[in-house]
Length: 313
Ligand code: AKB
Image (tube, protein in one colour):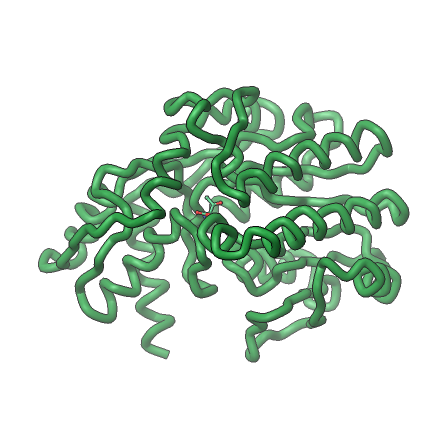
């Protein structure tokens, strides 16, 4: 039987996706590829490697008879601005390697794009599926490039590659990455450790967001949908909730009324301002039945319980 490879397996999405895929297919069917952030308590098949290394990736595909790749390895918006060359090499070079291997070994591929593909010329509200894509970050540039590469490999070579424009994803299994929407995870560490947090975005910085369980459910649903249902081969708009730091704090105060918040916006605020506030994801809903489950209150409760349990271990 063909196995599943997950790159970036110990990142924010990978940490939840790998365990879900293991539950569905069995621990011996999922290969977790990590580079730096490998979890020492991991149970399953673990490989260490770099997605920029084509030969190493090809060896893995052959060694495990891989049929599907969830290619998650990549730098985020803030990390990308610190190291633009590295962001380009990993985000674009890594994807190109996976798509070339997909062409030669008939792999099915999932690759995440992001709301970072949008920019200041994109409408701020209810962004349509097809719109202006003029991002200001190297991360966003790599996502637009990646979307076009995916569509090219589908049209030119028939590679079954599927993608979602992830909003800010909020989970607790992995440490939050170096992104802009990640304040919405860091705030829970502040809540549980100090009952206080200094936010690097403004109180009214509204951004599209989603609880991790919904993101994993949507990712797997997209990959399991029949090919004829997939009408977008760049990347689907994908949305659940939109909120501001102020609205998240109001929700947190229902759990901890004395929670102290202060706002010290920095360069990350400019990145947030370049992104839209709400997304129209009706194509995903119509094509393959996307539907979220978590609203802001349910997400807040789940993150609070999850981070608390993690920090108490
Ligand atoms: C980031 O903020 O960089 C990411 C993203 C929206 O892709 N969370």
